[in-house]
Length: 261
Image (tube, rainbow, N blue to C red; front, top):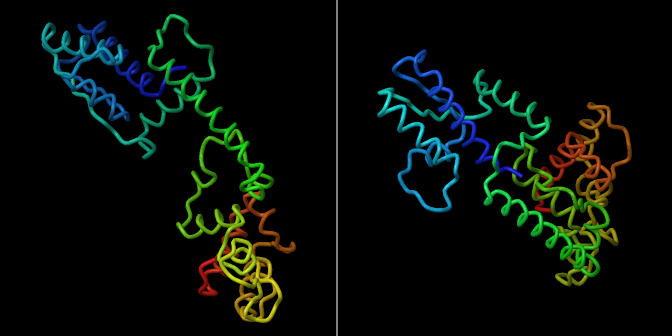
């Protein structure tokens, strides 16, 4: 139930407490490194109120004692996370390992953390229930194919792709794109016929059939074969499988058509 902010504040507080306990063995100048800038800024801030995290207050008290009672100089330094800094990477690994262990009942979790966790959970469940109620009459294609109730982050959160790729996949997932079949369904055009004469312009037609893009399709087919993909193209299945390598090749084909789909 503890927030990451409280965990980081607790870690800095414990480090300061350790310095205080070992004061006779410690040098006059001491440095504490942390990758949580917000905690370091809070410790340095002189603004105090009833909402202040108790571990920030305790860290400030110990810091004051070290500096003025024991005449030590303690420097708090922010370091960036996930940048290959050996000590920080080791600390992260140990923290992840410790998170799987049984919680220490003697460590107090601030009430604000408990309330925030409860409120977030309640808000999440209420939102999901509302979304599912709307699914009966809105976005049926998306909900039947892609909706994941347990997902707490966007599907592209860890995907390093250009913005148009993300946009294009989102349009496919929503079944709303700039082609005749979708535009006709929304009432933006009178006919879903393709310029090539085919009766229906949808995504499969553009990717697999439209004669306007025959030469471009040859290159796409060659690129797909180069990575060993010999299946029939099914965009929906590819997205469900998160086969980004194949989808990227198809996306490059879409871009080469010079059409915003």
